[in-house]
Structure formats: structure tokens, C-alpha cells
Amino acid sequence: MPTHELGRQGFGNPANANHLPSIEEANALLNEWVSNDRLRLHMRQVASVMRAWALEKEGATDQTALKWELAGLLHDADWEKYPDDHCRIIIEKLEEMNVDPELIHCIASHGPKYFGVEPVSAMDKMIYVFDELSGFIHASALIRPMRYEGMDVKSILKKLKTPSFAAQVSREDITDALSRTDYSLEEIISFIIEHQRETV
Image (cartoon, rainbow, N blue to C red; front, side, top):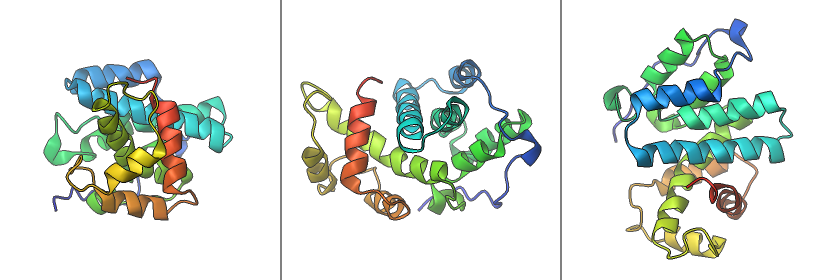
């Protein structure tokens, strides 16, 4: 299994707490680094679900919700341009920009067995949950005539049990991510379907 071990657990400077790029700045970075429309869509979808979760489930302020949204928007920003250094490059870029260390840690922890960074905060844990499931649910939508319209949790659960469908999505990662939360797979799937349908 390929890994991209980051070799450290600390990211950013605590003095930069709550210093966040704007959505416009984040999108400018994506425009510069990411040409693949499907990858951009994936990041926008994870960002949308992360923001909605922060507001609805965590009672977040607008500033905190922006932090969650930016983590989703930037978590795979270097995947296309720097595949051999995935996560390391975007982390270094955000550190250069003096970005909030919680946001940087969240991105660093979105795949613990790949990057060697354990999810700690609720934001860390939820990006790990949403990353794989968001893409899986979108793949499911793409083969349906009505896309997200009428999609139900049961159909997603059935596809998850079909190894050949979206085989690149790690069921093991989904199980591990969920084990770190107090939420059921059904709850998470329902939330993603509800909040991802508008970001297409």
C-alpha cells in the first residue's frame, strides 16, 4: 500500500490560530494546481458537507464553519500536481501562508494510515469520514438516471457491500473512520446525500 508518511505530528504555528484564507484565495490555489474537474468537484463536495456538518451538528460559528469548509476544499489540492508528495505540499503551502494550525492538522489527518497523522478533533475525524464516503455516494449518483433525486441510504449500503463497485474506495478506511465517531454509517450517508446533492 503506497503511503505518504509526513514524519511529523505538529503543523503550523499556534500564533496563527484563526488565521484563515478566504474562499476566493482557496479557489485561486485550486485553479492554479488542479485541472481535473472531477477532483475539483470532489473537493467542493467535501467542503460543502464539512461546512453543513459544522453548522448543524457542531453548532459552529461562521468562522469555525469556514475552517471546516476550507479543510474540505483544500485536502486534496496537491494530489494532481504533486502525486508523490500528496499532502506534504499543501501543508507546506498553508504553513507559508501562516494558516491556522487546526486547519493544517485536519488536512494532514484525513488519511491516517497514509500520512501517519491521527485525527484528533471533531473536524479531523469528520473529514476522514466524509472523504471516502462523499466520493462513493457521488459515484453512485452518476449511474442513476435521476442522480441524487430519490437516492436512499439502503441503495448506498448495498453498493458498499459490492466490492466491484467503486473498487478504489477503501471500505476499510470507511469502517476505521466511522469507528472514531459516535455516528452510524446510516446517519452519515443520509447527511451526505442531503447536503451534497446541490454541489454537482
